[in-house]
Length: 149
Image (cartoon, rainbow, N blue to C red; front, side):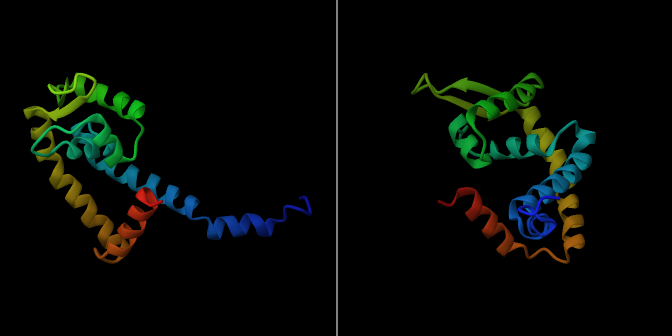
């Protein structure tokens, strides 16, 4: 072991690194939701994407990319399997041919209706594991980290 990189630095990063802790928790949460939604052939990411489309007017790709904190290229790649399954329709905006909008199909809505109880039950399980459902401060902090300056 080098003197200029002692084990104490490794321990400091292990104990202090917010990025490490958030990534580790995010992977664990993702596995839980992926496992729960697997019977519907749906990942947690696909569920979030589909749910972000549940609104009165079809959003633009840019709107959805912002909400999900994804770049447009990644979002477009994630839309393809949902489009192949006829869960969504991607179409040109009638007022701006450069803009594409994404809409849920009836099949997409039907799948979400089946997925919501699974999502709720999984959240209830996580609430029991973490000792309650008052995670307002945590969500506020995560939103600030995601969309803050």
